[in-house]
Image (tube, rainbow, N blue to C red):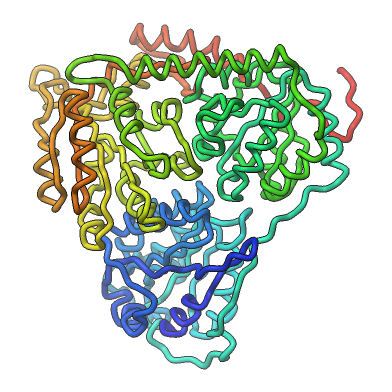
Amino acid sequence: MAQALVGFLKNQYVERDGAENRFFQGAWGIFGHGIIAGLGQALQQNPDFPYYLCRNEQGAVHIATGFAKARKRKATFVCTSSIGPGATNMITGAATATVNRIPVLLLPGDIFARRNVAPVLQQLESEHTQDISVNDAFKPVSRYWDRIYRPDQLICSLPEAMRVLTSPADTGAVTLALPQDVQAEAGDYPEEMFQKRVWHIARPEPEAALLAQAAEWIRAARHPLIVAGGGVIYSEATEALARMAADTGIPVGETQAGKGSLPFDHPQNLGAIGVTGTPGANLAAREADLVLTIGTRLSDFTTASKTAFQNPQVRFIGINVSAFDAFKHAALPLVSDARTGLERLRSALKGYHVSPRYAQSIAEWKARWEEETERIFGLRHGPPISQGEVIGAVSRAARPEDVVVNAAGSLPGDLHKLWRTRRPGGYHMEYGNSCMGYEIAGGLGAKMADPSRDVYVMVGDGSYLMMSSEIVTSIQEGYKLNILLLDNHGFSSIGGLSRAVGSHGFGTDYRYRTARSGQLDGGYLPVDFVKLADGLGAIAVRATTREEVEHALEAMRGHDRTSVVVVEVDKEMRVPGYESWWDVPIAEVAEMESVRQARAEYVVAVEKERHHEIAAPAWGVETKAV
């Protein structure tokens, strides 16, 4: 059965716009008794389907996710594991892939289907049923899940798995649990199962009547705004968006996944939007009477917890290949491919342009933000220097085609605002799950997707300590990463949030416990990150000043393997937030005065949250005031 499975996987291809490629580029994993004799043996006899050894099963899924994201979801990897803890290590990676709508196939080993030798090593027993294992935990984080009890079930299950993996609307993690005895069983399979199959990725068209209504709404708007999400990049709609914005003058705000939809210097690009947004994009959102969302999930960081769009007359149009997302905020739903939808809407808007006054505001907002970016990049703080200065140094060192990778901590907010993306895919942020530990593994996946691009992994010390082991894998496979490790002695982002809610950063610093208080409020722990990186085989140096950072970045270009620059930064010298808010509920009853004060401010702020699904003017229905 395992041999049949590999034979099928290596013959699956995808095609879009006439370009065809193999969908699965090989398999990642760590062999254990649950797969070594079944799937392991099958991979061994198929050298044209490469097997890659990772250091952590979660890391393997992050590598596959980073790879698939960089390949615009048109190629990915298989990730396999033994039963028990090897399988459960992949659950976090599965959630990350599914939240971000990235295709990854997971093949965890499973308990015996015939059951007579149960309980086997690493089996989770239940007194209520024998039809359960730890792999059932994958169900809520998978877009498709199945357990293969008989060899012939592959014939039905594999096409369904491929249907989901290659669907722009439904993709995410797919899990096929493989009982270890079934993997080794023989079965009869039709020859057609092992022939090349090409899965076409369609570009569905928007409905004509709704398209006409969308154009009418935009023409009637005084302050329209486009919100560009990750679907713009996955659909390869960046040029269509650039033409649409240039022709109409409508400004664009980019989500975390959508950053890079336009070059940073495009006249209509106001930059990041939402909680981690720029003042121009957020002011435009506040005033907008028409919001065109393209390929976005409209998460709370994009909508500033439903406070971003304050115009009482605001209406929404949603271009999205997923109907689930297209309908959000009671939008006029253009359920279509992002590129096709943009092209059709641009044609319907021929001759339309925003007013000169609005165009002038857009230009002024953009100019002010460029001045603010230069101010942050040009700070002479410390040492320790500011995080914004480090981002500026990396931004100047990177070529237009290079990639910055990040996922968690305070860096996503600062990078979303400050990073100057020049080409699509140059900003690689996993912010759907904001998974600590993604950065180095995901960076390796991005590098494997296109080795010609240098990859700059920016990671905080908290994420680094959670998962730095894939540095070893990058060296093993010969994919050089440029890693900037920012040491702020703990969890800077959540520490800042803790202070904002009145909790004084409790439990967020890497400090010794003191006998006096019984808390972690002593001196900082002496973690030597240079030695840690060096011990994993990387070239590692420490930089203290901006000049040292710039020198280290220049030296990196000449290195022959993964390199790490460790920079201590002042976590209290933060990049400001601009014209936005995030809903983090604060205790209604507290003895601490700082918490009571924060609660009072929270009660005022939460009143700005809007119920767009109820209050927005309905499309296609006559509405009356009540």
